[in-house]
Amino acid sequence: MVKTITFNELRDIKDRLPNGTMHLIADELGVSVETVRNYFGGYNFQNGKSMGIHIEPGPDGGIVVLDDSAILDKAIKILDKEKEVKEI
Image: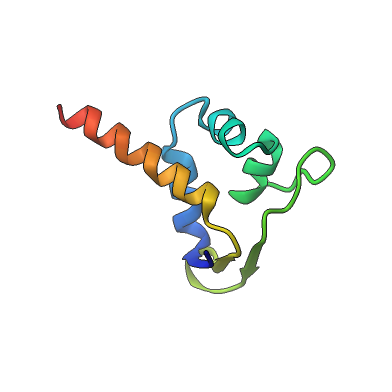
């Protein structure tokens, strides 16, 4: 599913993820950890792949168009669970 988000929003989601989340997402989706990092703005294409992220300059770090929102969806689900745990 194609999703549009600002680069700053994407980085904020990445920054709020608990330690080890990149590995968890990579394992669940069957991709390398570097591929997940690249999705959130990393640039290690020697050990990871691009996951259909297109960045256009603009306000808030620019606009990011994600061809596949699977990694973002997993990250948001993890953050939602973290929020639920903190509210208990």
